[in-house]
Length: 389
Image (cartoon, rainbow, N blue to C red):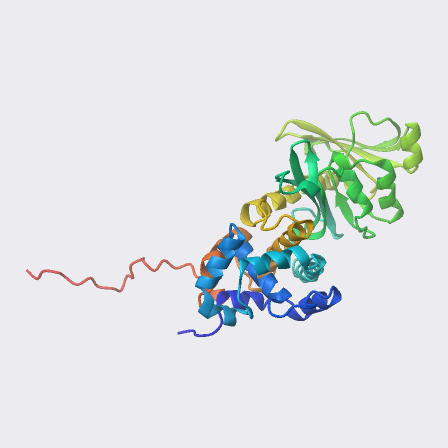
């Protein structure tokens, strides 16, 4: 019988603990802390995400029920909801944001060669935002509408592996296009965005940084066609044009030529007009890249369905950001485990299994790969007769 680590402890071994302590020291997270360290806080919050705990009291009750196993799972302090609440409110959320970036770097290397359905050598990103509704009376600092509060998650994901690379947490009133000002631009990479991010001045920054954008053109776009290329209409393409913007302000904001591609999607019977600053890729590949943008929507849906980011354990901005960043860390951790153990399961399945087995003393690989039905009858087994006639 295996008498080693718990599944939770094995899972935490996939974390770069040395890098975590560097992040803690960077922001002096353990300053004047006697018992409940940043690591204890992180373990409590990670447990809450993995098992979808409803409240601080729920976290405290469940962890205290496992008290004999907590030390071997990595906990070094007694778990109390008041202590955890104060830690979430006061300890700098940037500790967990920086640590998430460390894990993101590891995950991106693991998924660097994954196929996402488009034949492309360069890195491709999808950028979008999602809104998390909040109660106005509990979160007055995050005003969104007259009777509602909200925060926005502006997220850039790497399409190879659906790994989030950049996340900006803002109030619900911030317009999506303003997030482009903080977006890190990588020369040669492709950034796929929807029509809400069309701001010619900001898009020109992509061109100056040698990065490529793909978005949808606005219906009222004023332009002059410079040239046209032949397209194969059986693929859904309708036109491939080189244009310049004709509007006075637009032409000042973006003085360079643009590429305008029209595509008809037979599945949805919709016509799309794409705008990009890349003139070398095949027009059909541009359309396929935009179609892959939907992966960021699936990422948001997965987060809201599988992790605890729609309800919060604290009401301060620091507590909200801490919880979101630890949720992102758990997502990336599960992605790392899936890749390093070569698991043929979805992230949702892995999370469901872990939620029930965290404190079992079974190798994590066995837990995540066991698929045999123990109730299934063995063909070599012989059933004894109850009565002998």
